[in-house]
Length: 293
Image (cartoon, rainbow, N blue to C red; front, side):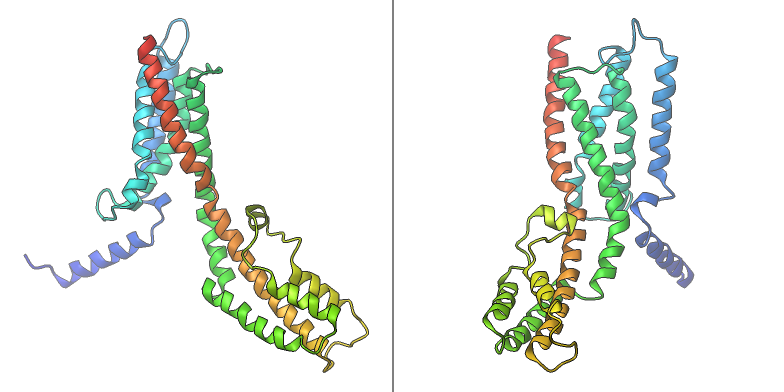
């Protein structure tokens, strides 16, 4: 059956709107509403249902919430597998991610009510703590992915990482030639700056953005503090000083890029291992419950 031109245009407009829609607002926040209803039902039933002597994970109500929570944990952990199977439709990756976020947040309520607020030094509490670590690291991930991509784009100034590195390499070639007439002390500082690896820094420096042992900064400070040569003179040291300033600016751009990328990725080094540990603790929790039941 042929489609009318107007129908094709409407379909394209809907598709474009869907492509630009955030996973947080997917389908008018459908999964947020579902998660809120789930939490509301759990809270109301918690206070409405009378459990003797008190609410705990071993009551029938506790088992019900525990089953729901365990099912959600296993299902939510499958997002990584879903990412490798790209497709559109009812269960598109955007829809799955939206459900992952909001149902994951709902686990805070479901998991806490499942415990009956009874925690101790045991495998059951370990599973709960790991669940909270996974959720909190996920909240951090949502926050950075909502704010940092724009900062990454602004910092790049339409340059790729390769182009940034090539810009430094071009300045380095000019610096190498400009430093030839310098004295031993001055040339050694320039050589040290050229030989320092741009990317050979620890995770602490990348996340903080502080590079205390930067030889380029040290060399620039040395030449900038030498007031015996006026700025704008034709002496080699003045040219080297200008090139060092350009190199420092380019390095700052690369380091901001690395910092933002690190902030975008570091949460995964907590989220994924904690999820694996949570699944192991959850298995031990379930086995021990049925063993002593």
